Length: 296
Image 1 (cartoon, helix red, strand yellow):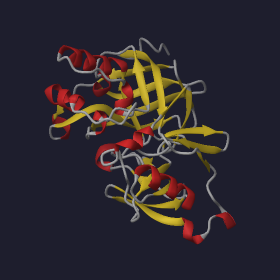
Image 2: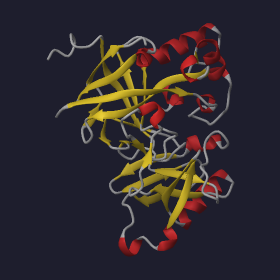
Image 3: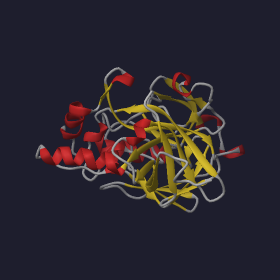
Image 4: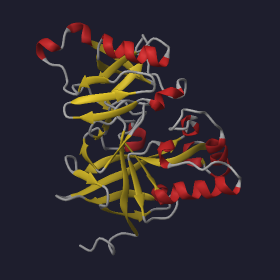
């Protein structure tokens, strides 16, 4: 098999990101393991209100300044003006998993089983965000099924992501947005605004919209990701990840050229994806990717 001649377009993985806590800062990584729910550790934790409903940057933009790190067997959190918080990454089991640790959490219209991370974590987030909070972990024994209207016969699962296990965009798509922002004398932005998992290089702007599957040359076998649904955009791309300031320039520009008829005219940027093959493989920056164009 010749990777270049077998695909209409080829490129490489430019960036990989994981977001351990939903709506908090991401971590740029050189490699990430592809698991059933997406990239390992991605959206495994979530901040909720006292009734279990998700809290996000939409209401609390300062969440973007909570910086997680995975250090050994701990999740380490830092935020402006706060002491460092260290939490175990291991899922409680046996005597550790007391009955009062089990809870329910709501991600939009989905209610799932979760594990409460305790009073120290709840107090830390409540003090920092200045509203009552809990921190929960997705219960790995729970299966949150992705909307089959977009996945067809494939049963895909995710954890606390909005709706799909992976989000793919390209450097060219960001470059085009920034060219348009510069022409309008607006501040340019970087890819962190869109919270992707994979950013691909070497393709044309929004080529990710026009392919059915993305193939990745992993070390042990070929990975195939299906581009399932355009990613509709909320106000979060207008939150500056460096200072949590909220602007209007990103969505204002997207309104000029990214109204998408596939999702009833919503503004879209990037593609939600599911895994068709390659679970267990390691994705790495620099790996080759390929896809075949589809204009249906």
